[in-house]
Amino acid sequence: MKKVFMKSISYLCLSSMVFVMSYSLTACSSDEKPFVDNEPVAVKDTGGSDVVKGISVSLSDFALADATTRTAYSVIDGGVKVTWAQGDTIGIFPNVGGQVEFPIQAGTESNQAEFDGGGWALRSNSTYAAYYPYKSKNCDYGNKRIQLNYTGQKQADNGSTVHLGQYDYQATGGVQTNSSGYLNFQFKHLGALMAFNLTVPKAGTYTSLTLTSSEEVFVTKAELDISGQTPVLKPTETSKTFTLSLDDIELQSDNAELTAYMMLAPVDLSQGSLNLMLDGDRIFNATLDGHELEAGKQYTVEKTFVDNTPSPDQIIAFADDNVKAICIANWDTNKDGELGYEEAAAVTDIGNKFYAKTKIKSFDEFQYFTGVQSVQEKAFMSCIALESIVLPNSLRGTGSYMFDGCGKLKNVTIPEGVISIGPYTFNNCPSLREIILPSALTSIGSSAFYGCSSLTSLN
Image (cartoon, rainbow, N blue to C red; front, side, top):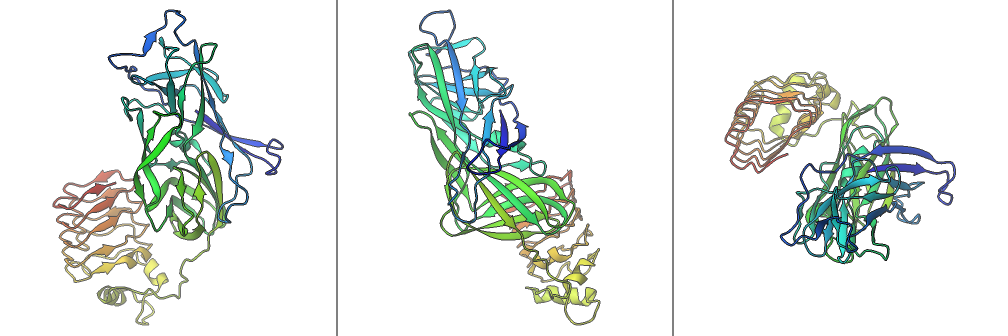
């Protein structure tokens, strides 16, 4: 399916002076044959009067959100026009029996299309429900429940909307044939469309945009029930955060605009505030007012990030006095007994003799060592008290045995720029519970996670 984003000069005059941005969604058809129960309701069309003559499906556009909503959100100036594209396939459920896939037959480039079952027809005396995009393996076909997953959204380019298609779930409840023998489905969007127009203070490459709430309100997975007259979306997994990955989107100048899009399940965010974080070469945060997001509605967040990068003369406040002592002894170039952000950023190699086998507990301040691209082997080996560390975004690889024997280390996020993890990097880290790996990763050394007996998540 393809969507056309239309922006107009005025909220009240949506049809005048429009420009068009279009994207084609990937075809959702499956190579598998449609399946039916032992008592099929899908039959070969023999021309009898009890067979449905045709299926027509209309798509609804995303409606404008209320212009008087809270200040954190404003409406997109125009509408989102939804059109069918070649290769689109819908799933159709009868009131008795299993689903059948119906690929598009006619009506591409429009919001109303005709579908046929490739030789299968449907009985005219049954009731049918339908959804998009069709996936043969995502539903309990006996109960007409489709499994939906909102995670994994990744935007390729600044302003691109290509990624939205596979997450723009649509459905309709039970429909019977009309007097002419045709099925007419009126599809409705199940999610809310979020658009972010962000002014970013510093040029650079950015890798993710994350919304964070104080409660687990974001729906990451859900079950769609289309057994009744109205489709019902039931959340099955929720989270405090929702992340849109950015495929190394580069902003070449300061104060450039970054436009990003998310598809979210309907959620009430009206209680409290949200944090919006843009991550990449630099990290920017902003606070947003909450709002209730409704299905089929579109919202825009307009935000200018404030450059809160510490100035060079600011002093790093170390949480661990042992770490501070090591840093001062090696990189306090102005000999003032403190380490400034500028001094930390000038370091390109932390070596391996300063931290290994020490009693340091945390080194979250490592993130400010933005000149470090690689770490020598055994850099933090046998730091048995180390629980927390934040690696710098400049890092491109980890050294062998880097955290070998760090028995209390629990959670580590590998920066997006890392392309290789050395052998035995996390060897014998029994408390390690979660690792988030970067999308650019190309190699993992042997036994990199050997002895990580508590590891339950490798994303």
